[in-house]
Image 1 (cartoon, helix red, strand yellow):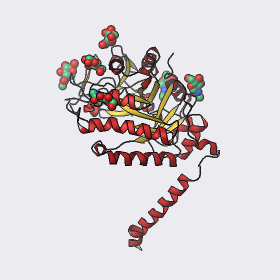
Image 2: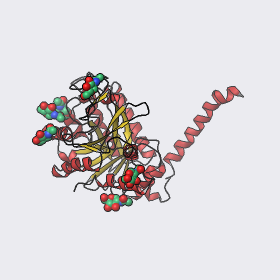
Image 3: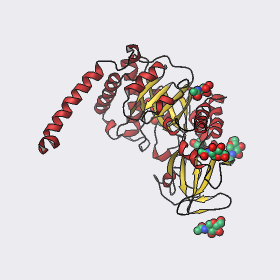
Image 4: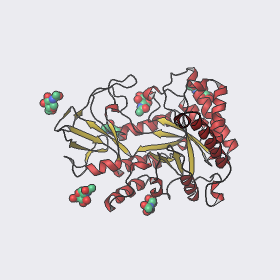
Length: 369
Ligand SMILES: *[C@@H]1O[C@H](CO)[C@@H](O)[C@H](O)[C@H]1NC(C)=O
Ligand SMILES: *[C@@H]1O[C@H](CO)[C@@H](O)[C@H](O)[C@H]1NC(C)=O
Ligand SMILES: *[C@@H]1O[C@H](CO)[C@@H](O)[C@H](O)[C@H]1NC(C)=O
Ligand SMILES: *[C@@H]1O[C@H](CO)[C@@H](O)[C@H](O)[C@H]1NC(C)=O
Ligand SMILES: *[C@@H]1O[C@H](CO)[C@@H](O)[C@H](O)[C@H]1NC(C)=O
Ligand SMILES: *[C@@H]1O[C@H](CO)[C@@H](O)[C@H](O)[C@H]1NC(C)=O
């Protein structure tokens, strides 16, 4: 009995279930209205690109704004049907080892697998989130651009109107040793999503807590992407709906929080010592904090300070409607394709009326005034 459950029996059962799943998936549309399984292909001019990491919080998103949801959680057919009913696209997450894609045969097989998956799940494209290190002009460097081009061509052909996008770091300067052909990649897909956050992943100067996405540093990244020849209409600005909680080795009266030195991809100091915290958690800390919400004029970012149960000081850097709308103004001024966030699940969708107001304000801050 034991061996049946633990061994071949379980495997056989898994195989049968998997086969059934495939049959259901490629056959019946899971939506009440079968029309909702058709690909979404009439995008609005302004893109609001949303990352969802799973669960059911999507029910409370501000759907009047959303154009695309990139699903990084488990496949949820209900989300797909709902998004389509609101005229929004739903796209897969795509990631593969850059060592493997050097072989064109492996690339082609992977792409065809993604297309099958997208068709089975009635998805409208794919977001390539490949954050691996690449040496400039290495075989992987060329293979990555080829992967993006081949994926885009295949999706556009196989699923008419579908969307292929690629996630790039906040600046094209080999951030975290991701030296990619950014112009080639942007040319080869519908648009790139610029991850304007984790901007302290490599700190070469003083090892202190700083903003996740300082205003000037963020905008300089976009200036450089456009300066290298990328059309602003190929750029979607990504803003963080999370912050970093740093444990201070020492917190000065002038709010300088010195942090432990942990190296990252060649830099001596990094935000890797911080703990990522969703906006909704930061908001619950405001009243009990030592400081309330402070504002750093140089980085144009809010932060707060508190003492933990062991008496150790913490500094928490985050983004709020004030810092986000400043960045969103750049989107309009420079004619970028749109805006989006990592990630939509970070807000409180079921709390007090105060929390709900904060959540609405975060959605509203995305729309450039
Ligand atoms: C980037 O990719 C494009 C398109 O494949 C190519 O024409 C260009 O030469 C590449 N640039 C560099 C610097 O590798
Ligand atoms: C922008 O480009 C300039 C010139 O190459 C470089 O010095 C600067 O570090 C870059 N800044 C960012 C944020 O990419
Ligand atoms: C902490 O900061 C205070 C005031 O800025 C300074 O006098 C002290 O030397 C610092 N301590 C450490 C361990 O860095
Ligand atoms: C924080 O304090 C303000 C002002 O006293 C109050 O209105 C609000 O409800 C408090 N928020 C929380 C989450 O306790
Ligand atoms: C930010 O950029 C503006 C415009 O380039 C410049 O005038 C300002 O001094 C910069 N601020 C900081 C804090 O670097
Ligand atoms: C959704 O966003 C729009 C635009 O900011 C706003 O007018 C609307 O009230 C929001 N809806 C909800 C339910 O918050």
